[in-house]
Amino acid sequence: MKVDRQTVEHIAELAKLQLSETEIERFAEQLSDILNYAERLQELDTDAIPPTASVLPLSNVLRADSAQPSLPRDEALANTADQAEGQFRVEAVLDDSSD
Amino acid sequence: MTTYEGVIGLEVHAELETESKMFCSCAVVDSTSATPNTHVCPVCLGMPGVLPVINRQAIEFGLMVGLALNCEIPEFSQFARKSYFYPDLPKGYQISQYEFPLAINGWLEIDLPDGSTKRVHIRRAHLEEDAGKLTHEGDHSLVDLNRAGVPLLEIVSEADIHTADEAEAYARKLRAILRYLGVNSGDMSKGVLRMEPNISVRPVGSDELRTRTEIKNLNSIRSVTRGSAYEIERQSAVYESGGTVQQATMGWDEARQLTVVQRYKETAEDYRYFPEPDLPVLNVSREWVEEMRANLPELPDAKRDRFISEYGLSRYDASVLVAERAVAEYYEAALNAGGDPKQVANYITGDVFRQMNTEGRDRDDIGVIKLTPTALAALVTLVQNGTINHNIAKKLLEALYAEGGDPVQLVERQGLAQVSDTDVLSQAVAAVLDEHPDEVTRYLGGEEKLIKFLMGMVMRAMRGKADAQIVQGLLVEQLDARRT
Image (cartoon, rainbow over all chains, first blue to last red):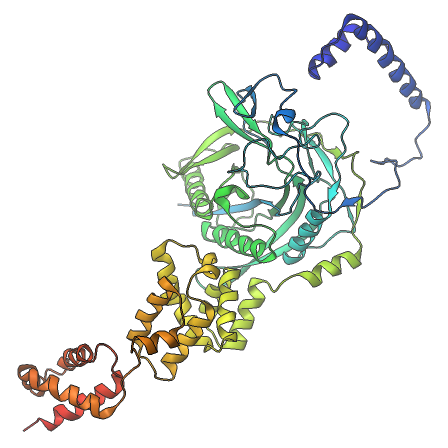
């Protein structure tokens, strides 16, 4: 599968990343390579393999309930495009949240 | 005319009072008062490349709630991604549980106003992360993510509830259990406990399920009761006039006391649930479950039954005392200090609650009032052994409530002890009768209720400290002696 520059620009826009011309070309090539590599998995016959959510033989990975220092607020807000009163500022959303 | 009944299921979201968040180590803080965005980190901010790690305490709190609600705890549990796009969760999805919740198939016994009880079935209880908080300002919204990632337990009942009273009883009992378990403060005004009834109606006697509406994010038990009652009535009226109820998400307008449509649901939302690939699965061993079961405190119903059998209380008094864990603890502390079980119960549910109401204190604050359980026990004992009478006890209780202190010392210092000396009382009675010849004549002429007035006069002369029973006897005796 070939990733074209429009796709890279679209992904960069979604991820709020600013890419240079060279980066766009380099990432288009790299992303194409990665997807092509992953596509090889499609060739495998998986009919007899049950679906799984995780390939790691892990369970019950838990941490103790103890609080650690959080990020300083200016660092937490450093990447946002718009902020006010120490909060992220977004376009008004009419619909209410989920649950 | 058809009579309709409600068909109500309740979804309850309870934040769990862990120290840190569900999947990261940020502190859980009061999101109504903490400075915005001061308890956030790359995990709860949804930064790329970070990994969540499950908080063991949150799982254990969830298991405790499941067990307290008589649920089955499946051996396998798993988190799932629920995709939705809204700025209150920056990842673009909420980590929740879908196919494999922590607890399923439980029940809760509720107490109804007519004294009967009923079991409401619990469909499931699952863990998820809370979302951040939005403040809307004109064409923009401000996002505070302190609350994003706080452990949230969603408890879903079956649609077993048929009236607003039942919805209220369910909400109260569930809140009490969460507070007994120490997993949630129950402070609905702070949003740590939120309730959403979904409501439809049907003709009484039928078992059909009609279109339902959902009232979102109710933040008091009263609004659960009133919102449910309002929706049952509104939907019944719609059918009565030949209309149909539309599926909708409603809000409760507290000022106008009615439900308002927030949006109509035309299609089921597609959250594209799938197993959370960043979190390993949970195997809940039976040993773990039994360890949690052994950790459960005595719950309200068990405590109520014990108060009835151990202390001979009425079911009503016992229910009032156990409704708040702090009150039950105060009560038993007073008994340990030697107070009589029934008398202590009477004073708590009467005078103590009255003082607290006057002061505007919640009952769960009983542990911090100046009248200590030991002082109350001593006060009750002073009344029982005849050292002080009931009127003095009432005044003393007010003083102890306001100032604290030891009732035995106060009685000594202020000379409040009851006067039971027959000679002293006899003289006081004789003096009062001499001072009120008219009333004495009228009493002897048949106006027997005047004895109460004369009693009051003796009490006033004795500054409230006379033994009322002895005075009563002396009055009758001396009045009789004045018959000619």
